[in-house]
Image (cartoon, helix red, strand yellow):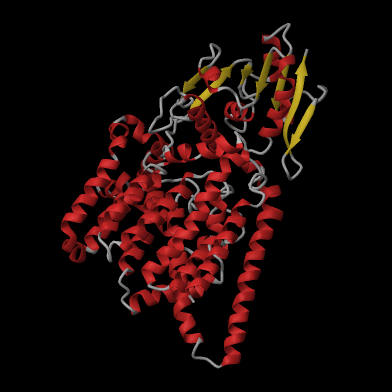
Length: 550
């Protein structure tokens, strides 16, 4: 029996790898600007040991000014070393650790529910999960955070049988904090809550737990300078509900319209009340049927659209599993529920694209685990029914699961790339390929920044020498409130061709006698200018036109 379980596990892992690796360089249809930033900084570390800002082996990567956490970038180095600075080199890393997360789900499910079958079902559900597949076929830091959280919780659960695992679990717990901003909040909160809820058991291992806590904080020491500096809030300011520039005007406007006498108007309309309202609204948005089973997250890069983050067939098993946690007073009920409820706190402090699949991916394994438990309970009932009914029930479930996966895969491969290629910044590779073949003919290459960060796509797809870029006397970049703009390097210039002073005609007048190459949108150029080359999004709409001025 045991060898059959591991054969089944091997098949699940192979399936998980296939679903993450198949056509990974083509779908998602393009690398996005975060992927090329992660890839180019990993390439720079590989080549010269410094990031794009000439920082030696940094703990935080300034990148576009949002200060990326380091592990995703360092983890990407082997893939780029073996496959090069390209789509496969960047995306092979999440494919690998995404598949390993599925493997560790088996061990976690087995440890929590004391059942190999529960572990198999949990691993299978994560392996076919639209939520997890979407975010492990592209280079997203949250999927690496999820890998470490699953590994850490498994090791922590093992600690209840052998206390040495409490200590070992602190390593992946600490590493998760170096992966993604949501994990920086989730992991410490989760450990505090778990240590409190299981204090009566853990007090028996007081010395081990104290040592584990010390190790956890020692491993976080490299973060201390960043936490104490102003840089720690850079990313938070971009997305925080408390830094919404419209918040205070809305409060003042509502105070002015209020019929309440002072000071009641101030007590009702103030920052604390409004932030609490938005936090609660954001938090609860992640528990709706729309998010979980019907439409999923609205952000096009993070979800295939038109279906939930979970499959419909999981709903009854999820409900049964949740009820069974309470009915059977399961030993790890509090651990699982803490995992769920704490996972949505970080995203609820933000204000964009709510509900959010990327920032809440840490919660995805919870749903698979509890669904697996619900399946286990349901299977006990099925065993008691007549044989014919049992066969029909199991066959029907297999058909429903197969059809659900087919519908998702059809959506993902046949609909999603064409419909949402614009959202993935499609067209940059094709435009830079043209530049690569013809750049020696031109004195100046003007590349619109309308779609965002053309300099990074240019560096990435040209495999541009990091040292040459960092020492370029023509490099011009400047910081705004929330971002870093690269305006020039070498012969490249990155304006917005739609702005006054940097329109096509303005730049032609400003560069007399020079041979210019322009990459922009169709409307950026006069109709009478011949197009050398055009790039379309996969739905046929224009992405870039390329023209020249001699």
